Image (cartoon, rainbow, N blue to C red; front, top):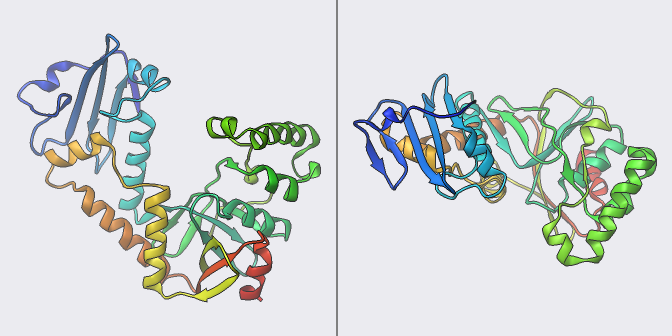
Length: 307
């Protein structure tokens, strides 16, 4: 996107207005946002969402986002993420809230709610010699492939103690993260307002750029369970997980753009996203499972369905 000092307000001429700050004309492939916060004019221009998208934002938008992204437009990062998500869906891809690991013979996608075991199960697989593709959110396509998607991920203090060693990440980094995790763990008030220790597993273990997925599972904390699932059951589970963890396409500028442009529909985009997920699962060559355990020993449960 392009950061500019100002955007020509002529875009408002002959426009219809939605709410106090969105301006557009029917089927002209743009939406213009203008509002004033703390005496600073915020301006955004979004054009051609289904093609070579153009996005201009004023510096004042980025400045305000550092302190309080307005609810009227949400953050610029949210807008950029929404645009990227739409473009990926158009290409037959989608993001799934899931981990993914691969060996020479098998690739497993592990979808779950936050704080259930994606990063931890990934780490356990990596210690067994598997390769990293993702441990939080992974990009997949409708051909059954998953693509390397690496982010720093949070890890709880107790899990850090149990599964991370100084040799894994280096002594200095280990003790620095250990102290931070201990402070958070002992003070719940601090824990609520500060970020937990994070690890970027892709920097610590071998990775794989892409792989055809064989097995897809969901995991949850509870009495030990291994249950096969049908394609339709798994589709609904992953859709539920994604809706909670990643949310819908809900950026105000995207919805205002959709209102003015008949060839773009958020609902159609989200339907295409679900279609991409179904095609992905149809092209996976293995089985689908729902797994649960309450002792965090995920690798033990997985070995029962792999071996």
